[in-house]
Image 1 (cartoon, rainbow, N blue to C red):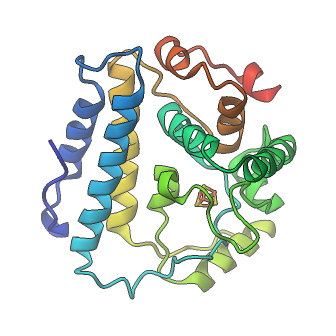
Image 2 (cartoon, rainbow, N blue to C red):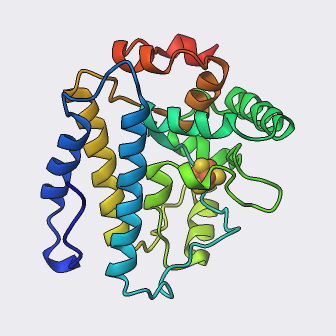
Length: 236
Ligand code: SF4
């Protein structure tokens, strides 16, 4: 069952949560093969993009987010293990030189940010390892649900909020509420569904998880089934 209703005022986020949980908790999934779950995740993201497009009536003029804008890519990003696997598989298909550069950036970033809470990470203002020199997201087709939820209506508000954080100031950022709520709901639905299916539905820090998965390419299914990934392994 796909994502259906597109009227914001009547949109039933609770129903979407239940639907998404069911999609990822289906007992028919072969737990030794993550491919169907990855395909389901791709489908969910595609449906969400279509829904947002319809909800906005094709008018994106209220959204300040766009290609090359990278001001918010300095925060802790939480992702599910399934999202991390999708990203690691995408990255492994890149040119080996490009991949080596990304791995080096992940190593450096992880050394700098592991263990930091959200406020500390933002104050550090270290950019995401997946940004290229022009500020483009190198994993855009498989970017996390959290990243997809960010939908500022004013880029100056974003910059002021990040800068203000350094001085202990909390500044509001106006967001497109439908997009924010939609992806938050999908994140919860994916995580809950995976957990109900007996798979690992926990969330992890983006940088540390993808770094680990890239260096352990044969463990995807095992990690999903056994929920065995722990902080010590990520921290190393
Ligand atoms: S994954 Fe992409 S969108 Fe998300 S923080 Fe990193 S560069 Fe930004």
